[in-house]
Each structure stands twice: as C-alpha cells, then as structure tokens.
Amino acid sequence: MEGIITKSIGGFFFVKTKQKIHKCNIRGKIQKQVYPGDIVKINSEDEIIEEVKDRNNLLMRPKVANVEQVILLHALKNPKIDEKLLDRFILMVESSGLIPIIVFNKVDLVDDLDKIKNNLKTYSNIGYDVFYISAKKHIGLDKLYEKLKNKISVIAGTSGSGKSTLINSIVEDVKLATNKISKKLKKGKHTTRHVELITLPVGGYVADTPGFRKMDIENIASSDLKYYFPEFKKYEGKCKFNTCSHTHEPGCRVKEALKNGLISKKRYNSYQNIYQELQNKEENLYG
Ligand SMILES: Nc1nc2c(ncn2[C@@H]2O[C@H](COP(=O)(O)OP(=O)(O)OP(=O)(O)O)[C@@H](O)[C@H]2O)c(=O)[nH]1
Ligand SMILES: [Mg+2]
Ligand SMILES: [Zn+2]
Image (cartoon, rainbow, N blue to C red):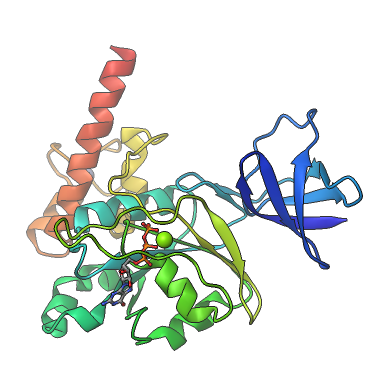
C-alpha cells in the first residue's frame, strides 16, 4: 500500500494512505534518509515502510521532499521585516530549483501599508508573486488559497511570522499550536518544532515548518550565486568578462544596471554580502 509521509517524530514516520494515517517504523535495510513529502510503500499489517520512491526534489531547509512550491511568509511587524533574511530565504528556494511565492503577513498591524508596499515593490518587479495578508484577521487569503489547491506547498519563514496561524486559518479542522510573541523581544518563540504536512480540504498538502532566525547558505559555490538572482539574468554573458562575478570587474553590466536604478540596491547588497560570505567559506576550505 502506498502513502505519503506527513511527519516524522521520535523515530516514527506518519504515513497517510487512502484509508488512514499509519504510524510506521522503517526497514533497517533502507539506508536513505526519508522526509515528509516522501512517497513510500508500506506493509500495513506490520506498520512498516518497505520502500521509498524516487523523489522529484528535496528542499534543504526545511527538509521536505517532492515540494511543488514554497510560500515565504514574513511579517510586516512583530517581528519586524528583515529584507536581508528574506533574500536568503529566496536564495534557498531558488537554489532548490523552485520559485518562491512571497507573502507579507500582519497587514492589520501597520497603518502605512501603501508606503510599505512601495518599499517592497522590488520583489514584484523581479517577477515574484507577492501577497499582502493578515492570517489572523483573514485578509487577502482567498487568492493565496487558490494557489495552494492540489499542490504540495511548504510554508517557510522567520519564527513568529504566522505560518501556523495561516494554516489554521485556511484549514478549519486543524488546530496547530501558535504562540504569543514575546512582548519584550518582539520575536517569535519557535512554537513549531517539526515539519508537518497538512491535508487541504480542496486537495493538496501544505507543510508547516519551524521558523528560522537566520539562514546559513550551504552547498552553493560563490561563482554560481549570480544564477539565483533572477534580476541578473538578462545581463548574463554580456559583461566584459565571461566569468564576471558582478562584484569588482570592469565592464560589468549588472553594476551598470545598478547605477541606472534598474537593479535594487538592497538586493545587490544582499548579493554582495552572501558572495563575500561564500568566498570566505571557500578560502577556509581550500586554503
Ligand atoms: N496581528 C496579527 N498577529 C498575527 C497574525 N498572524 C499571526 N499572528 C500572531 O503571531 C504570533 C506567532 O504566530 P505563529 O503562527 O505561531 O507563527 P509561526 O510562524 O508559526 O512561528 P514558529 O512556529 O515559531 O516558526 C501569534 O501570536 C499569532 O497570533 C496576523 O495576521 N496579525
Ligand atoms: Mg509555527
Ligand atoms: Zn558583471
């Protein structure tokens, strides 16, 4: 019998088949690491996973298999918006071969929404789908809900951004634990501790994931970083040097576009910071 892993806790894998959710062990001979989203064959009498199907992809942070889309959820306030961190989340999704959908939550807490939207228009200019919502007050959810239909989606983002609240709002019959933002720190408290795939009433799954406060970039070569910034794409191969990293070389079309206001300064700064960070890592590795 075939099913999908919805979560794994304490060495058990919860496998959803057509009939029910099975709490399974895994055959010792299966060496492969398995994650929520993996399709498996189980022996339902012994409640054991016999086989793991080949997967289409594996999102690295958080680890979820066979993901079709990633919703990056960030709050406009409490915790306050951190565009540098958002750029790192975007990079993580792009490097997995997926295109993020960017969602800004807690519109009910801000009173200068137009100004904020104007500040954040870079992301829609790049070509990303951008939504402004209030998960708590049910504002702007319909269009987002449409996007989730019949797909395996992951909701990722900073801690306290409202991921679990959003899922509670769209799936009436699940109640995930959410938490009050610590008043002093105005930060989330890491309420969700594991990844869980939740079945949507309209078909499809959405994964609630634990939030991060920082995002280390791994498994990307500094020389590949430029390919994950979609706004650089149209200048690729047009700089004076073929191997141009768009950081210091003369005749760089990306830097020219930056000077002419065609590329966002903040995004370019994120690129430069991450590029430097990756270079430092590489120097430490290869000496
Ligand atoms: N005002 C307002 N508060 C919200 C909104 N969405 C979520 N919150 C609050 O923000 C806090 C954190 O929400 P959670 O849903 O637990 O956040 P999370 O992203 O799941 O956090 P982690 O599980 O720690 O990663 C809770 O107190 C929510 O009630 C919103 O749209 N407006
Ligand atoms: Mg949560
Ligand atoms: Zn260049």
